[in-house]
Every structure is written in C-alpha cells, then in structure tokens.
Image 1 (tube, rainbow, N blue to C red):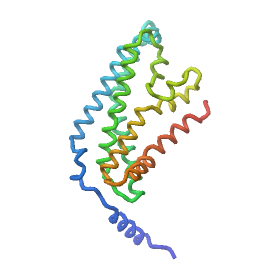
Image 2: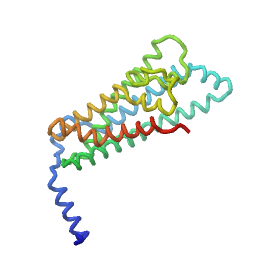
Image 3: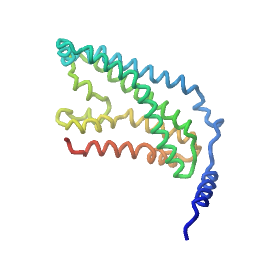
Image 4: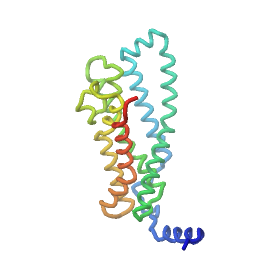
Length: 230
C-alpha cells in the first residue's frame, strides 16, 4: 500500500523533532564574532599570498622572462584578482564542509547547528595559514633561485615531499601534496569540535567527520590521482 505524501512528510517531521538539537548556549568555545574572524582569516591569507607573489614567485626565472616580454602587468592583474577571490573561495569551502558535516550528523541521528559547523570549519582554516607561512619561510631561508614548479610543488610535510615530483605525472602531484600533516591537523580539529558540540563519544564524532568530510575528500583525491592524463 502506498503511503500518502502528506503522511510521509509528517513522519519525517516527527523523526526530525526526535533528534536532539544543541542549544547555542552550550557552544561556548565557538562564541565569537564570526564576521571578524572571517575577515582575519581572509586578510592573513591575502597577505601571505601577496608576500609569496612579491618576494618568491617574482624572483623565479619564469617571472623574469615574462618581465622582459612585457607581460608582467598581466600577471600582476591576475594576482590582484586572485586576492579578491580568496574570501569567496573561503565562503564556498566552509559552506560545503559545514553542509557535509550537517548531513552526516543528521544521518547518524544527532542534529548539529549549521552555524556552529560553519564556524568550526572556518577556525580550522588557521592550520592552512601555517602551511602557507611555512612554505614562505622555507624559500626565504633556503638559498638559491627556485623555479616556478619548485614553488608550486613544495608542500612541507606532505606525501609529495618524500618523492621527486619531477618523476610524477602532473595530475597526480595535486593529490600527493594535499595529503599533508596540516590537513591531518584539520581533521583532528573537526573531530575535536564535533565532539565538543555533540557532547557524545569520540567515536561518534570521528564517524561524523569521516562521513561528512574525510571520505569525500579522499574520494576526490583518489579520483584525481587515478584519473588518466589527457
């Protein structure tokens, strides 16, 4: 016998109500001005990108060739546009991650507020600011003139660093450099945050993060790594 659509909606609504929803007053460790923090993260990311472009990439042989050809102005224009795009990319990234965690927590049987998950994803971005800072520090300290490829493929504490990137197909380098200790720190932060938000077992927090973020992340990297080069 078919169940009427209206009845199905009522059953789903009652099921949703049965899942406990956290009160915002319980989320004390995320009580801060998210707009101000988002501005801080975006400003620091733009500053680090500017420093890398100005003091590292500008010294590479390729940039010198482009300068001699009169194309440096175009490169600077594109860099400027990329700075403005960073906050938009952050908005999309935090929204997608929060949505994945929200769906995973709901599927497991516990509702976490989307706002808190969004803040959680945003705070974790600090780990990747340290990643960029370490990349800049490395090229400023180590003597020599790195190539554009050296700068693009240097990701400290990543799987790519234990290999010779020149022996790896370009479409596989992305996956290897995205698997790094800074990313693992981001996973750990999400598990810690979900554990604090849900006030449940660590195992449940891990499964929420694994299903909502880690598994899709690894799936995308796996597809990138094993995809056939065009």
